[in-house]
Length: 148
Image (cartoon, rainbow, N blue to C red):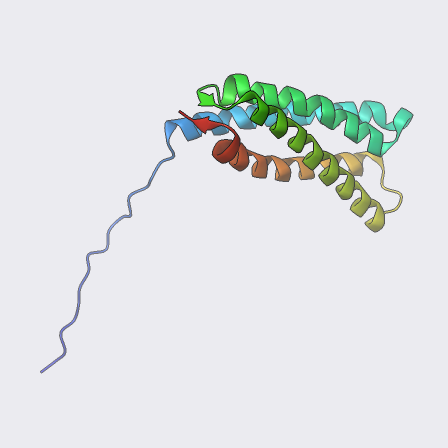
């Protein structure tokens, strides 16, 4: 007598699509990210020669963090409720994160390539901005802007 065998129907696994809210949030977040990253990099390049890389980066981050946060509050996460104090703390923490992260990124670049030119600095900051922005999206969606 042979041992019983189990059979299982294999078929397509249903594809779970993201919610409409997630798709809307991600689309607006990406749009704002591209626009503010472009503005940040443009300001950085404009201010790099007169003020140096670090000050140019800090100023560019300060301006674009405020603009980006307000965009998300008024457009991306418009249906969300968040107390004003939480939003202001989030803006300050975002600035501190990007300022530290961008400065450390530039310091690491200079340690690896002491005479890095503005093109390499800009590419490095763009990659850092993209990486930090991805983390920020998750935090904004789950902690700062709580859905009603």
